[in-house]
Length: 413
Image (cartoon, rainbow, N blue to C red; front, side):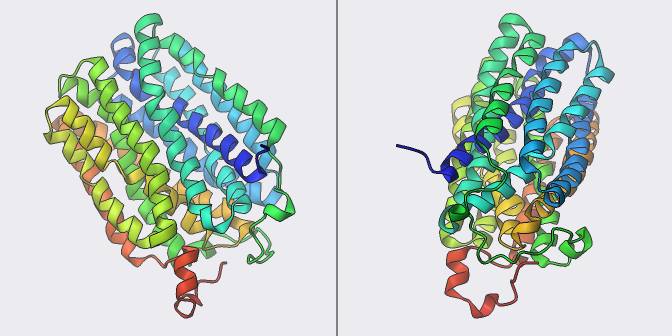
């Protein structure tokens, strides 16, 4: 049976962004092996995460908007995939902190455009009834599967058996294969029959960032991104070290808990957007953000490893919300011509605040007050999006169709 272009594109983009996170999170899982040899502390771990987030944010904003204007999404995606794969492998060559910082920053430049370009392509090719689900697979499930389920045991095994440098070297191979798939199968525009842009106006892709921020949903999504990315980056960067040094877990036990977290990422990354297709984006954001605020508290207070793994799975729901505020809600708020611009801005500003500033401050706080403090910071960072989401205007097609009068003011920019 021949795959439709929508499904083929979904599979390739899921692989692409999945391996972005495989490479991005490799440092977190390998840090317990790297820190001893390179003599790194928690502040430096935070700085490494911050450097990547800074360049990721600037690159996402700039290249996301550029891809809309040049209408050259496929070439930019192809170059990005090849570049981040090579820079990830180059991390294994470093002899100290400065060199590692440089390669992580370059990797952020390469990875920044992948999500806004991918989601703009997917929004254009997806049927309305499964738009949230499709975006959830790319934005949530795929990064969780490759970055947090498959990644930890493979990277930890490679580091233990062959050294952390070899683990970095081999991390580039899947990315190069994905680049070939992008070159061979992805189109700049989907077939006309698959384009779900009939209701979108054919406006120029030159709307400024200030004009985007005047749209209430976009402004709220930017603020939510700043807080939610703080929650995510702190958890994903510090949890492996927290589990080993504070909880006293063995590397294999740490890998089990992180894999449980990754499995939750996969499941909730698809389930939350799918549920939002039915109940609405706004109630899904509020409910699942409140649950996500409990995850760092579970890591703090639960001692039994197996119970910890189960409860982490049940409470790590935030990555499903990421799809909604970072992709689906903006794509349903603005016109198709400026989706990558809007997504790049939300991701970029969020990464700047939550990914660049927060990890360094959290690392400094951990060195001064102890690692448990970062879990309290993460809990607050998931609670704020639940409150901000109360102000969102509903965009889910099923919910909007039931209340057309109340959504007349929701025309796309």
